[in-house]
Image (tube, rainbow, N blue to C red; front, side, top):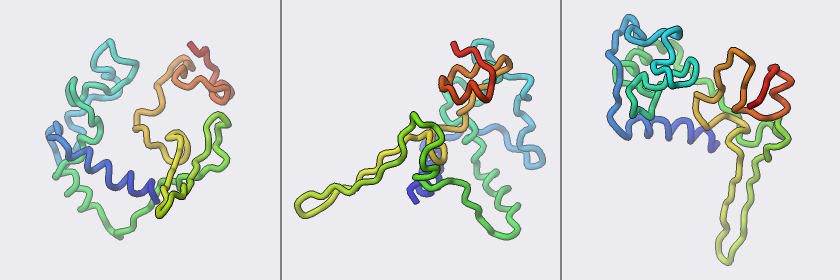
Length: 161
C-alpha cells in the first residue's frame, strides 16, 4: 500500500514543484526535438550514452519534463477502457530478497504508554525500485562496476574496477 502512495503522490508533486523546462510539444511527434541515441552523450565528459543535460545543465527532473499539460491531454485521449494496471510489488516481496546481502523489509509496532509507534525499515533495492529510472549502467565491455556483487559476475562477464 505504501508503494502505491509513493508512486502516485510523490512523482506529480516533484514534477510540479518547480517550472518544467519542457521541450516544444508536437502532437504528431513528441520526440521531434529529442536527441537520438547515437547523439548521446551530449557532453563528452558524461558517461557513455548518458542522457544528462537534455533539459539543461541544472535540470533535476529528467524524463519527468515530458509531463506537461499537453502530454497529459494527449495521454487522456488514448484511454479506451479506463483500466489501470498496478505494476509495483508489495513492500515485502520478494521474501526472502533475491540478494542475500540486502535485508528484507521489517514492520514493527513499538508500544509506549498510551500510544504505539509504527516503524517500517526497507532497502530501496528490494521490491519495486524507488531510486530512479537511471538505475542500470550502459556497458559495451561488460563492466558493470556500479554493482559489485558476485551475482552480476555470473550474468555478465565483468572486470569490476
